[in-house]
Amino acid sequence: MSVAVIINPISGGARPATARSRAQIALEAIERHGDAAEVFITERPGHARQLAKAAATRGVRLVLAWGGDGTVNEVATALAFDDVPIGIVPAGSGNGLATELGIDRRPERAIAAALGAEPRLIDLGELGGRLFVNIAGIGINSYVAAQFNEAANVRRGFLSYARITGRALMSYVPAVYRITSPDGRVDTRAVLVGIANGAQYGNNARIAPDARIDDGLLDLVLVEEASRLRTLRHVPKLFSGQAARVPGYSTRRIQRATIEAASPMTFHVDGEPVLGGTTLDVRVHPGALWIAA
Image (cartoon, rainbow, N blue to C red):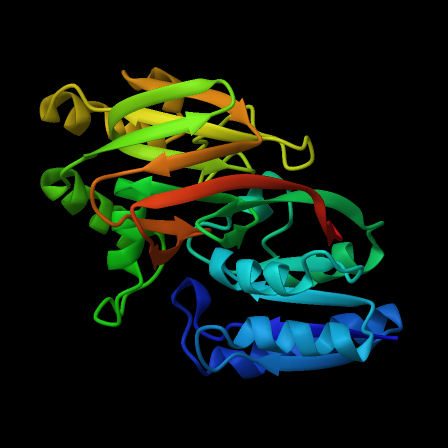
């Protein structure tokens, strides 16, 4: 059985020309392990999902996603509810799930670890009909994700993300949300509504420190805004590992919830922005994905 490698050639701000070197590293690492390799380069959004689905249909034993959180999301959602595991070669701006799992940033080591790992089951989340592996949400994080993913933003990487976040803190206007779950209902004017399967966005931005990817639950994170000054002063802590010190921060564990707003909501799944409606359903899918890490 072979191993499929799906490479995003521009993840993490890389130049398209790096695709060739990434492909060569993958081929050599997999052949050293004694497996046959199939290497594919993505050409457009959604392409990784198509490639992963086709690879699973062919019967590969493992699909390696080489890229950032968006690439991981595409491959994972293609393999969801199937028996083919995903492996991760982190190469994005945040690498939230890979960082939380302790996956090595050096490609050769990440590949070798995935090839030798015993696959295990992890949960997937769902927001607005879209699956996610790590974190989804509404509010300033989806606002930033939308700007980060615009075609005009030619500079990728963490510094670009931090620059956009800094601008967003000055201009973002929080909305009022009604969140209903089996535990009750809350109406809140929130800067951020996070739905966390994993603990962090990446780069130590641990938005939900107690989240676990295999506990059958999601962490619902709220950051309520009392004043813009307080937001300006404290929201940056969300991205520096100090979420619990942000005034208005709260978190609780859920399996299901419904989020409502007066206007259609832009949300994100693993950093990829999506335009949704005025009602978004949230749920967890326990043990929905095999991962080799």
